[in-house]
Length: 175
Ligand code: IMP
Ligand code: MG
Image (cartoon, rainbow, N blue to C red; front, side, top):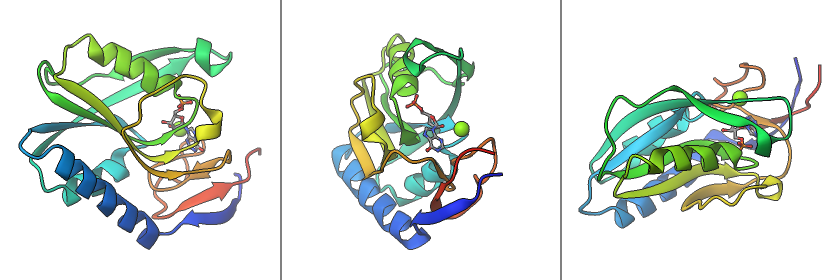
């Protein structure tokens, strides 16, 4: 297993940022009914914290995507492996993910969900590895910009490990 190199954001820092994001989202969606779409598995913890800080009425749905292919991210195929159980037509959708990297996954998901004709669609991410972006993705709400390092914790994994850490840390990749 790779070792934890250093803590990037501790619990208090994460909580304060999630609170600030929730306030902005609550202001922007005042008077609307919001549907949060939590992108499994990584966004489970972020979505759980975010939704409890919202002051607008919100529903929660879950979706899981997988990307196939060994080549560069941009040529990998993104498929929905666990779909929503509700129709999103005419709904105000907020896609929730913990981290955006190349942007390939969110770009593909936005395209697939747009076909279902929601009233609006936005994205909230806690972390943005902006320097790695290869596809343009409209991110409406972002918690922190992060350097190009592999991070774990707060839902994010390295080979399905470390998701349960309450803080976000940088790991040394490799065996
Ligand atoms: P993208 O399609 O390149 O934007 O990758 C998005 C997905 O890759 C995220 O939703 C994460 O699941 C995963 N990912 C990207 N960077 C990291 C990281 O540093 N740690 C853990 N997972 C990551
Ligand atoms: Mg992962």
